[in-house]
Length: 128
Image 1 (cartoon, one colour):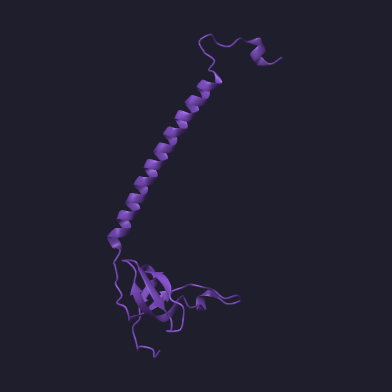
Image 2 (tube, rainbow, N blue to C red):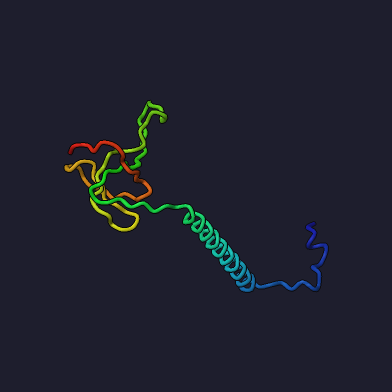
């Protein structure tokens, strides 16, 4: 025989209805979600503060040459020997503080690149 048939339920426990259970569960979940959102936002703010403390904003003038970080690997070739930069590319224009339009050759298609992916080109200017 099952145990709950042999022993009666304790008299001080009140059985909650389905609606009460759903309401209590909803309140608990909303509290949990609110706590997660707050802690996630605080962590994002801490990470942004640490990133901003060490970042150096670099500006490139239109017409200057840069290397563009564009990692790619070829099949059957070790990554150790791959080139991670494309270029030199000419800076066409600056869109905003962090985006630039660059072009590899005058005939090539220009593309938008984030400033974090650019590195100044030092050396002899290529003939184009």
